[in-house]
Length: 159
Length: 365
Image (cartoon, rainbow over all chains, first blue to last red; front, side):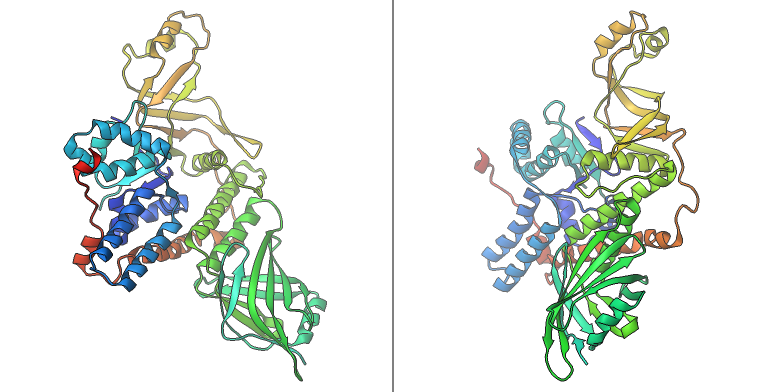
């Protein structure tokens, strides 16, 4: 299995689900963040794909006229402010190579279901970050198709 | 008589960031006071925070400015550890009693010495300044004060806290090894940070896990090693004592003594080659590349130096004890900002705005 559990001071990056739980004020994320911050004095990094997903949600609601112009501007600004605190990991050449390798080996239905998770995972691996996730099952599925000698370092944050 | 006064809100700048707000002042600052402070052998300036109990008492070592200056500079020294240059910017309002209208304040900082304790003290002070809602700057001798906030983005505060942590770890290493280390005025590299962390955990935790992709050992081709070598090329549980482990920090070689290594699942990358060379039984060292399959090694220190009891003077211990408070205020702000990205939305709206994008499979065909 191409999964390694991270050691306690290893630099970490959020996956989208845990980042969303942070935004939703879920206590388990606070507790894990406290442990991580006390040890490293930094907040986890953000894969660029996670910012895409967070902003896409606001853009989608605005384009469907579900939120006002004022609310739209406010939420976009807040996400930008929040992102600015984090190191943002770009989806670069190395990430693209890892993602394309795995994507080609997934079933059609897994491709459709997991393409965002794959981009997030590939970005974390490409930048030598451990990935914070709650969803071990999906992480194992994707890591099972990683190229030889490429490992997913995982930090499991659960309630 | 000339006065320095301040409006309700003036700006406060820090060398490391951001313009902030200065909130209020006692209003008057006699012009003669500048000369008085400069002439007095020792005058003090207290800087305290609305959120932290500690008061930092500074010696005023110089005051530069006169009734024509648009800037009055106080040079303050804290306990031989660091200097603060507090630049009060404003203008003189002429009249019977000229008054200095305080417009904004610049904070500049300088360590007095490049050592971990000075760095730790300064970074703690900077963190307090930036994490406090407001700080009070007071010169008791002339009954003058002003209150300011010194806001800084959280990522910059995190950098201050990281430096503070590195400085603290270096202080622990200094005490345990009874040595002196520098705190360089340059970017500390990732490798240096890792060496510092390794030494720190060896001293304080004694047993800890460390990330490791692979490492090389050189056991001799001897009967004993051949006996313990796995008969098949499969992962196995490996424990062995190291020779003396050393780490180099800023050109200082530190000997941490022996460790017991424990690898839950080790594999030998060059298995066939090693097996063949071991079989020669010629006592020659054999290069053996070991790969921990779970990416980590458990280290147990057998004789690394210890941190002495009561290692710190009260003044430093108080600053160390602020860890919890500094981290809590930082995280509270961070969590508040994270939550504000969904503030005011109903549960349904939150679910909708955070749902994940779904592409048609055709999009990738």
